[in-house]
Length: 100
Image (cartoon, rainbow, N blue to C red; front, side, top):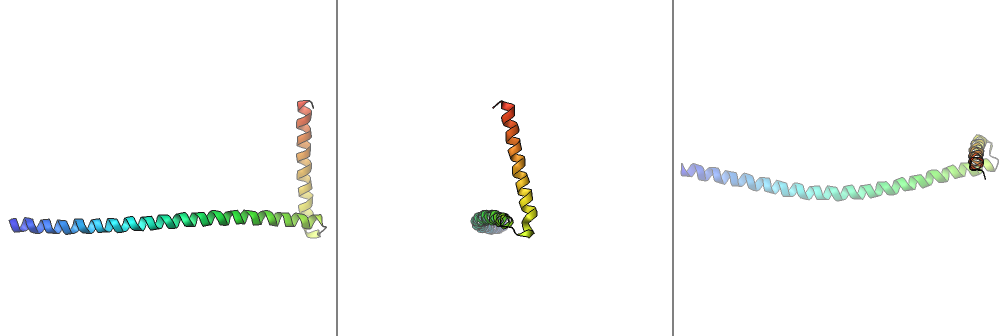
């Protein structure tokens, strides 16, 4: 009986030690993955910002191309001018509503 209890206790101790070891390993792995996640998140944000800058540059290049008379971008230029005219009209209407 005492030997059975001692054997059960040793088995339980081995299992607890194994679980504790697994817990430490998983905790370390979690910290590594969390660090990697933060680094990837920073890289993603940097790339997204670069992408936005490049998209804005591409838009400006098309606009400059349209201004310079490139027939491929005439429609873009017309749309841009129409947007500007609508914005100016909106500003004028606001000024008239305020009585200035």
